[in-house]
Image (cartoon, rainbow, N blue to C red; front, top):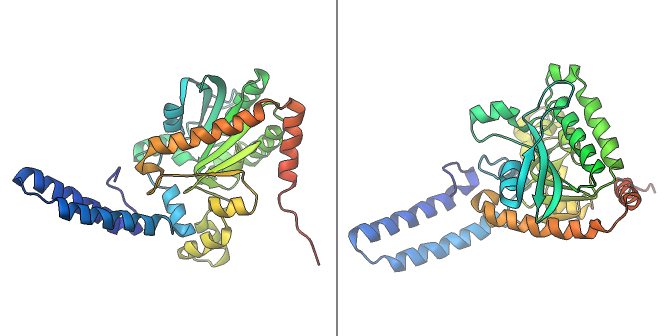
Length: 320
């Protein structure tokens, strides 16, 4: 494991990993040949990993998306980009630490990157407000995206939030209006916009930086109108029904792709992005480059028209 933290369904895998590590240490310290035992247990471990991680339930994928060691926006910026210069503030109220952004270079191309940022521990999570942005965060993001449009820079957006901050202060400062404005203005941007849901994609908080020409979702991320717990509390008055809600919300990358709500699912290594962040970043880089190349030749008019058409196609239904 990359960390001491483990999810309940990972326990048998972690125990086998620890047993293999103990055998290796014993073999080295006592000069005993335990190669056969290690090989046999390693085979069992590989089989168990495939069985568990290739058959995750929607609720288990939600838990994976929330794993505290999962790569966050700053991790992907560090892995994929160079010359990152963070820009601060909404020029109206304050600088929201839950939503970051700035100029960077991605494979030699100048880009504007924006994204939600969570913390690794309690202190950092309080600083980042657990990735739940205030209205000034969404205003900052919009300011940066408009700057990118002015200088003809592609925009890379990384979504990872349980939802926009629902506190009284945020409502007093116009949370709903800030998100609604972003939806409208992102649809009008004259440059390519690629959105990637890297962890949690919760409700309007995700949509506030989620309107793009291409929307990608990592294999163990989720994108939903409401959290499973919130849905369970509304429908069944019982948050313990969250696994049932997750199954019915169709929030996994596979479901979203089938419903044509996203453009591509980004594969993760077996065990999740937190087990091999470098491999995950490389998978994402390949897909981002592919979509950037497809969009770079389009004119501003073609980009905005295509974006509008993309979202107008969603939610169509027929009545018999």
